[in-house]
Picture (cartoon, rainbow, N blue to C red):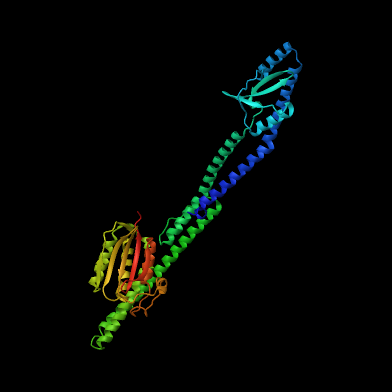
Length: 435
């Protein structure tokens, strides 16, 4: 998955998190170099001077005064000094930045053989061996007097800050992208021929402007669709009346004109009525019909039976399918148009077939006509397009396949036209099962 090409929310969150982490890392390094290390160096220098004073006292004080000095030192400073008897108190201290600096200062002051030790069982105490005249002394003191590297605490503080910042950034990005996601979902619903609810106009001013513009666009499209439907329905209604009178007049011409001529005139009138029906079907909005659970095979069976009663050579090969969320009347129009298209342009027996293929329920209408060249398929799905020279020659409004394509799109289905094995055309509509 290409995360950078993913949702706006994740891209926004990723950019902000990277910026926050980089900012915190830079702050950590600058604080350590410009603040922490200079302070550590001052503290170590002060304590090394203190050890120098202790060393000088051990060299100059008489035994009685030395004892009092060491007792006061242990009581006030927590520094214990006692004679060394040759034993090693433990392992050498680590080489963290503060300890390394302290060790180098000691070696510069007291000699290269000066070492800092950690006693087993007492990791919070450091030991240093000092030579004062002919005697050696162990100086034991709290580790935090020199090893004050607060990098761990600073790192934990930085990570806590990053976590809080990520949570806040995620909330901000979510509040910013949620309205945009609503607009995207509504636009997708509208693109499938649905009628989404108005998008809430919330969020930043720019996002509210986008939501407001989308709502205005949706209402404008609905108004245009209503006007188009009213216009086409009005024209269709106005045309039916003179067509009915014309049909009556043609029927009354029986005996006055030749029978083939009269039959041709009746057929032309029927063609005009069929074209008007297609106009009405194309103008009708599928969004007005609610989705409900429907049996695709049962709908296909009913449509095929109706076509058979009208004299079409239709047979069925239907599979048992799970219920689908359909607009039943729209799907009936889809099947009727596919069958009528096969009757009008095909030849031989027409097969209406349903099957389950993977995660899709597939409806297919197959004929034995001349088929459609591959280069013409997408063009013939558009409204008011015909290719009579490739089919049987009978004319029409060129809306049948366009109606099928629009109804399929409104159901999230895939509409394909392909050559049928053995000759003819296979028109298939694949509905997602939604499992």
